[in-house]
Amino acid sequence: MTVFHLSAECYPVAKVGGLGDVVGALPKYLVNEGIDAKVILPFYDKKFTQTHVFETVFTGQSNLGNRSLAFEVLKESTNVLGFELYLIKIPSLLDRVDVYGYPDEIEQFVAYQISVLEWVITQHIQVDVFHCHDHHSGLVPFLIQYSTRFDSLRDIPTVVTIHNAQYQGWLGWDKFYYLPNVDVSKTGLLDWAGCINSLATAVKCCTRYTTVSPGYLEELKIHSNGLEHLFYMEQQKGLGIINGIDPDVWNPETDTMIGDNYLASNLKNGKALNKKTLCAEFGLDDSKPLITFIGRLVIEKAADVLPYIFSACLEKFKGEVNFLVLGSGEKYIEEALSNIPISNNYNVFIGYDEQLSHRVYAGADFILMPSRVEPCGLNQLYALKYGTIPIVRSTGGLKDTVIDIKEKNGYGIRFENTTPEDACQAIETAIKLFADTKKLNMLRKKAMGLDFSWNQSAQQYKQLYNSLITIL
Ligand code: ADP
View 1 (spheres, helix red, strand yellow):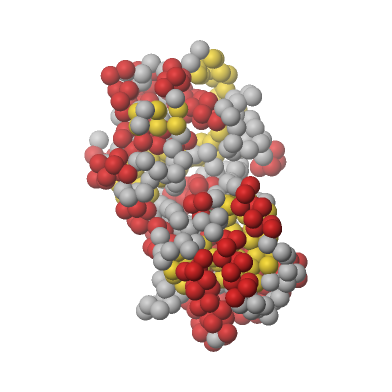
View 2 (cartoon, helix red, strand yellow):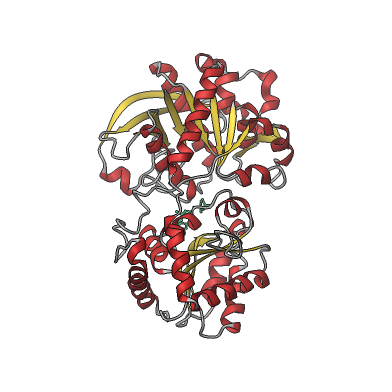
């Protein structure tokens, strides 16, 4: 069975957040399950593309309205990622440094989707399932059914995975002419609230959609940036499958990005060494609990509340706790975090640094995630794997993966509201837990022993693909 994964991100080629981690790992586990999973990504001018060998497997022409675009399909020559990787390169459109943020982002992703389909029809490539990730490939389920240009792909089942429904790929109707040979009687399927909405279209037209946790599947019916009614109406097509983590990348025993490797059996010493190095680098007091935040500094992550939480706790627990932030995002949040005076209890690194993130997971005692919205959340899973206790707001995937220490078999700290008060109370619990070294070490060991590997989730995706192919 051949499954085409269409995505904007794939670690280590191009990653901005969890989407990259998932698309860099899931296909590898599907290949282990006997599925021919291939990833098709837009081309980016990144370290990975500069340092790996690619062969051109196709050169073609696609149209974006009246603009004719020459494109190439490049294949990574060695399958170094454990699956076949293809990149769609369009000079001056899909050959840039960043994944997101260009004024012509809509043109980039529409051209990407049309070019993938042009390649598939021209070369008569056998595809059994199109698996589209987020809105960047959300028009594919519509195009293959309702554009006569892609008629030959009409019966191929489509799976859409929603990693984040906040971003939906909106196009004004003035850009409708970008879509080739569309059956105009079906244009209602493209519309949501007066514009073309790629994610809404994907949900309406796909065979099945999945969310990255069961909790998020339910939450989308209540909060999904305007699509609540749609998720309610289409719920019979929905399925929640929790993300896994890739131990080839995230494993304190073998991680080449951390200074001192460790196992559950020597975690006390291993974590202490990593913490010492990290605290020395950031001028923090390594005798006190180290609580970190890693992530995008955006409202969804409640990063706007962090400065209030940190200021309140630094005042309340004077000298008894450290905070270290690694993140980038909204400028006003970056500034607010940078304006908190640096001390031996607080420091912040504004920017994106993959290697530093590994060192922080390994060196921190706790990770704080006060998220307003968390479709799955990978940070808490990585933290657990490194024996770092998560302090999370009870929402989405955080609720699905973190059991509070007050409950049977608990290993994390949960709180209810995205408020400095609730977060500070949870931090107080963490400080007390840190003082109880015996309990802390028992919980760390338990955390490291939890199984959040991809094996089980990959099986669920396989079952889903099989069910779609059997139906047809
Ligand atoms: P989201 O996809 O919403 O950003 P996830 O928790 O699913 O959140 O995934 C976040 C991923 O991005 C994790 O791998 C995390 O370590 C990484 N990450 C986020 N911000 C940074 C940063 N500033 N530097 C390094 N890694 C980061």
